[in-house]
Length: 85
Image (cartoon, rainbow, N blue to C red; front, side):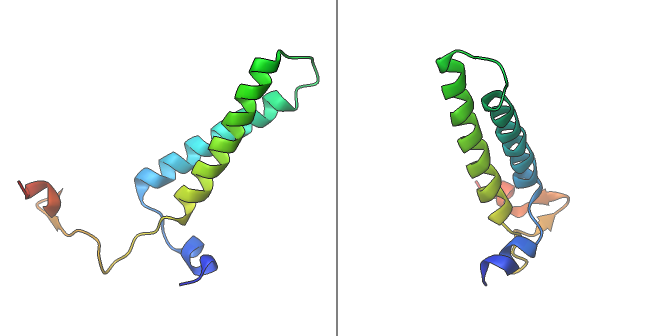
């Protein structure tokens, strides 16, 4: 499977949520960095880290796919892995 095929497959719900959080972090960090006013260096540094972390979280979360062959089957609405002690 190449990267284009991987990005076209469906993403699990947890990773869609994580992707959206990453997008929000990257956007907020970018807005702070691009602010037209002078901001303290600490705030700009934190915004830079937010932007990088958000970008990485978004890219990694988008690359996770649901694999129908290895997906855990549901039993009575619960994952069968939750029944294993």
